[in-house]
Structure formats: C-alpha cells, structure tokens
Image (cartoon, rainbow, N blue to C red; front, side, top):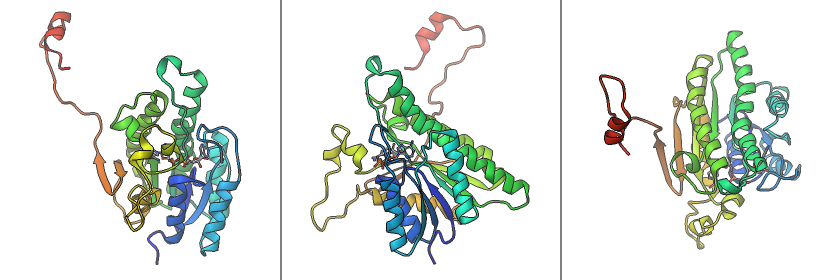
Length: 289
Ligand SMILES: NC(=O)c1ccc[n+]([C@@H]2O[C@H](COP(=O)([O-])OP(=O)(O)OC[C@H]3O[C@@H](n4cnc5c(N)ncnc54)[C@H](O)[C@@H]3O)[C@@H](O)[C@H]2O)c1
C-alpha cells in the first residue's frame, strides 16, 4: 500500500518542474490527483492545456488516478473551481499542494506595476485563494461532524526567507508572505483537522535555469552520479508532509541538494529598554544594528 493511498490531492502548477514531480510521486503512492497547470511562460504569459494533460496521461498510463485542470489559481473563482473539481471527481479533498509560480525579476526603480502585480497575484494571492476555498470546505466537513485529516503544503523560497535576492522584490516579498501565511494558517486550521507547512526548495527547473548563476550550481550530473538537484528530490518531503500519519504543522523547511533544514522565522536577538519616554539620542546611542 502506498504512503498516500486514497488521499485526494490538488497540486497547482503540476504540469512542469517541481509540481510535476509531486504529481507523479503522489500518484505512485496511491493518491488521486487533480493536476492543475495554466501552462504559461516563465513570466506567466499565455496558456497551454498541454502540460497538465501530459502529466495526467503519464499518471494514467502508469495505472494511477488523475484529472487535469487548467484554471489560473490567482483567480478567486478559478481556485474555487479547482477545489470543487477534486470533490466532484473524487468525492473529497485531503491534500492541497500550492506550488504554481512565475518570475518577473527587475530592480526596484525599474520594476513596473504589472511585474509587481503579476508575481504577487500568482504566488501570494494564488496561495491564499486556494487555501481559502479548501479551508472553507474542510471547516464545513468538521462542523458536520466529519473531522478532516487534511494537509496543506505551501511553496515559499529562500528568496524571501533566508536570502534577500536583489532583483526579486516582488517574488521575495510574496514568498516571505507565504511563509507567514503558513504559520497563521497552521494556527487557525488546526481546529478543523488541517495541518499547514511550507517548503523553500532549490531544484533544476526552467525557472532556475533562467536565473543568472543558478544553472551552473545545478548542472546535470555526470552519468552514474546521483542527481541531487533533480526536482524529483523535492517531492518525498512534500509527500511525507501530506501523509495521514504526519503530525507536523506550522513549519517551513528548506530542501535542496540532499539537505532538509527546519527554518525559524523572525525572533528577538537583542533588546534595549527604557524606564521612561524614549529619546532620539538615547536610541541612537544604544540601538543594535
Ligand atoms: N526551482 C527552484 O529552485 C525553486 C526555488 C524556490 C522556489 N521555487 C518555487 O517552486 C514552485 C515551482 O517552481 P518550478 O521551479 O517547478 O517552476 P516551473 O516553471 O517549472 O513550474 C511552475 C508551473 O506553474 C505553472 N503556473 C504558473 N502560474 C500559474 C497559474 N497562475 N495557475 C496555474 N499554474 C500556473 C506554470 O505553467 C508551470 O508549469 C514555484 O512556486 C517556485 O517559485 C522553485
């Protein structure tokens, strides 16, 4: 029996890259998958039903269960339709993997409103729209006396939580927001039987190959070498976090090249105090920097 036997799972952006590997592994482990992908370019332009359908065909050819969905997950109604499709096709929803993503890098003075909006929409709003509609379904289930054993796995990035990456103000801000959203959602949804975690992955995909300097870091391995930076090496962690038996919630993990690290967020490192009213000079002389 697979580790995810019978788990009904929605995976966004599962037509390519890391999401595709999640879909193939989840299906091989017995999950029923709604494979979502809009099929656009790296920058999120255009649409193509091909990538989602190809992954579905591959899963079905291997004996698994999957259906395709080509909604834009940054659309409120598109996200709602995606959750509803899982319920209509497979009778329920157990796991949501928020993975879809795009890049529109630019330095702040030259970043256009459309570049900011597109990246915030796909990543931050897309994560929230999916989370909202899935959470509403799980809350209703819980209130009806059928407590879910559900899991959400979000996709953050080092460029937002560990490494301020110049040229990615839009992307890093969205990914930092996704990490915060994960912790808040874990607090809120525990009562409905929903665990919420996130990953900050690094793997060789079209997104990283298009990022200056990243391609060299993740070169194809020589024959016989283990391919640590394959996107397939990200999916086992996500699959574990999706299992019924996993107890973990409210954690963001970095996963890259054979290492998995538990990340910790903003915390106090040094404090100055006063007994009275703050004075500018007092702050200037004592403020940690
Ligand atoms: N590859 C890495 O090293 C890396 C590093 C940090 C974070 N990430 C994150 O991992 C996730 C997957 O990235 P990837 O590297 O596999 O990229 P990818 O481009 O190979 O795959 C992303 C998929 O998302 C789909 N997509 C984009 N916008 C969509 C939308 N609005 N609705 C539905 N589908 C949409 C695309 O069509 C694409 O197939 C992203 O969230 C990315 O930010 C990746």
